[in-house]
Image (tube, rainbow, N blue to C red):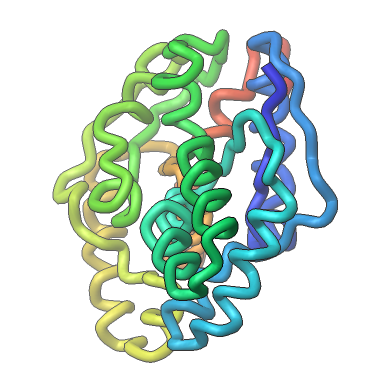
Length: 247
């Protein structure tokens, strides 16, 4: 299968290792991955901040870029939620019948990484090896918008050497929320403190998840407190092999 990678703007800028890990996993499973250089931001930040015209422009660009894509994989629940929930709304507001048709058809072919593996490809064991104790943080968009359920946990339980430890209050927000962390920093910091406390209670060596936006927030606190607990995207764990590193 030819899979188009929508890496997201912040992964591209700050977490290129996530994109490489996604490619490693999908190619290991026998699929071909393409990267379309014209891709850019999904427009979520603009939409959430009230700049609907700018968000609509980015929506049109996404549709133009991926119009003929067979399947689109995105390692970010928040970006997939933006595409699924609000692209049809933005297209409808344009009054452009062809854009509405193309958007509705395209949205159905966009998958969050764990959804793609479990639901579309029917895989829960990707041949990974990661001999560490890990806990899983599920982002709000993954939990409440995409309803990913236990898909990430299914994948982690099939990683050889990995011990998955349940995270208390796993349904609670980490406090990031994009611009929320900037506009409501005190509340965000309090929410983050509770999340970090729960992570440390697991005695896990690493905290993983499907959204680097959450993980950069959580990882910052873990690092500042010198806890020794690292954060890494689900794809990076699934890309790890017994030979060492990503392969």
